[in-house]
Amino acid sequence: MLRAQLVLMVWLGGGVLACAAEPAHVPESATNIAPKVDAAIGKYLSESRARSAVKSGANPTASATNPPPAADPEGLGNAALRPPAAPQTGLADWKQRDYEQQLEVARQLRQKREFSQAVIGLITLLESDAAEDIKRPALLELGLAAQQSGQWLRAQQVFAQYVVRYPDDPKVPEVILRQGLLHRELGAHTLALAKFYAVLSSSLTLKLDRFPYYQRLVLQAQIEIADTFFLQGKYAEAAEYLARLLRLETAELDKPRIQFKLVRALHSQGKHDEAIGQGNDFLKRNADSPDVPELRFLLARSYKSLGRARESLREVMLLMESQLAGANQTNALALAYWQQRAGNDIANQLYQEGDLLGALQVYQGLAQLDRSPQWQLPAWYQIGLIFERLRQPAKAAESFTQILAREKELDATASPALKTVVEMARWRKDYLGWQSRAEAAVPPPPPAPVTNVPPKAVKAPAPPAKK
Image 1 (spheres, rainbow, N blue to C red):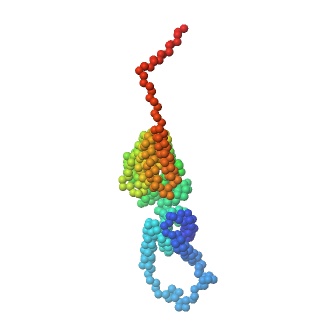
Image 2 (image 1 turned 90 degrees about the vertical axis):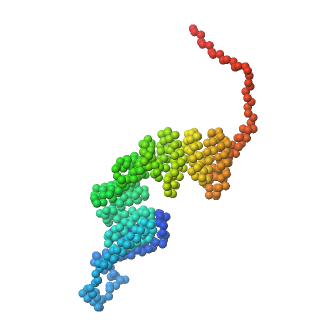
Image 3 (image 1 turned 90 degrees about the horizontal axis):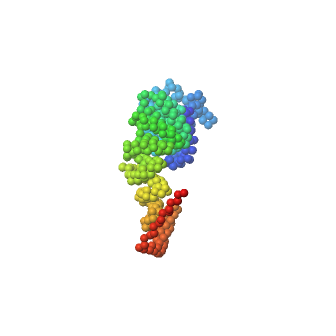
């Protein structure tokens, strides 16, 4: 009971910090629901103290403000004089079913992301006289509601109390895994790794009847260890874990995702040859994966780092021409992001290195990705600059004219950088027009005179005389 009190006191105290830090995660109004939660917790704590006092032999109701009960003149307080009590088995079963239904309703509310209502139902269960087989999952649901609503400090505190109160529960390894994820979200990478390693050590005492469940947890913990190493910049350790997982023969692993993470780790290490090998193998096996756009971006950069500009350009063009079959909105946005980023990155490098034709090809592809002025006008400006350097002023002026024709589409919210692009395009177009007129005004130089006199032969110098 004391532990239940501590859980709810921690929930109340931690909730202040969590709600203040991240109010946007909870869809319901915190001001409307907080008094209800506070009242439920206060009632639970007061009743818990009373029950504790009864167990210790004290009379919790005897005080200056609460006088002792009046005498019973009819003797109904005597058990021998009372009528026989009705059997309680049916009532207990009914209450148990009611508690189970309340727990299921709270679980469904959490799954629907109605977190405030779910929390009220769960606290009501925790303050009731329900059995431990109801309060235990209710406490776990309380932690899950906090985690999913972004209240990580509160969730961490509830999960910690769950582990303390139910150390032998089969769900403890999963709770420890969630603690590790929360530590990582809070930036405590060392504590996160400690929790993930604790999940691995729990496999030493696993129960055979739950072997598949524990196996999935252990595999997930290894993946999280690799991800944590990657976030810390320890790419070698991350690649080692991922390569080890990739060699396992199990259907429980999402091997395409693991191989993709391995490519990222190898690329970040600068092991571009290995990254290219793993990346091309990934493309052969998983051509329709939503990770393909980012993978092609990594391949393009690896090829560029090795001086293989043609292969790099090929990957960029394949990326910009690609379409994900049946892609949802999230994948479509990711594809557009990597297309734009890869194109910009490689095109700028090619332009700076003097590969004007390669840069022109990429910029022309970039201009077709997004027809909004914010994206298309800067791409057209770069195309105009390239045509200038290629000594094709007419095509350069055409690109700058396209920019000026869309100036009226810019509103007051247009960025200063975009307005600068328009002004620069106007200046360069005027400059090209002036240059063209100046060249037309200057007469061409006269041709060289033509004569029938053959040019004089140049005599070779005489060799030096021998002594």
